Amino acid sequence: MNFNALKKYCYEIFIYNIMITSVVCLFLGFNNWFFIYPTIGFIFSLFFYKYFKNEEYYMYYNLGITKFNLFKAAYFFNSILILPFILLFLIF
Image 1: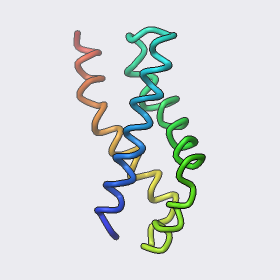
Image 2: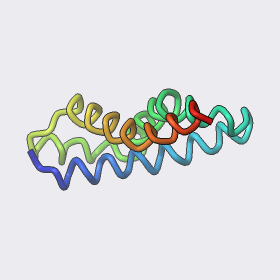
Image 3: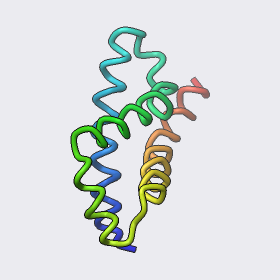
Image 4: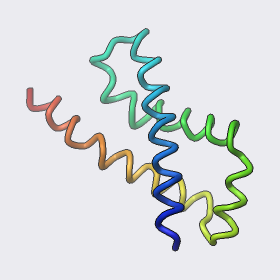
């Protein structure tokens, strides 16, 4: 499996996720950030990636990476990034 391609996809999903989560938190409050990021933000970031960069899925398919594997890798990457912040939020 091509890890550079997975890293590129995860990074782009991460950028969409941060933007969407920030906009939603402007309306709902930043104390909800830790719960919006891995749920609503991730789902909408996948939707926006499909809407704006749908042609890139063919590149990943040609590299032998299915959409399901991309989704799993992106969710794992985003979960690893947010896990320390959630733990800090629960402790304090």
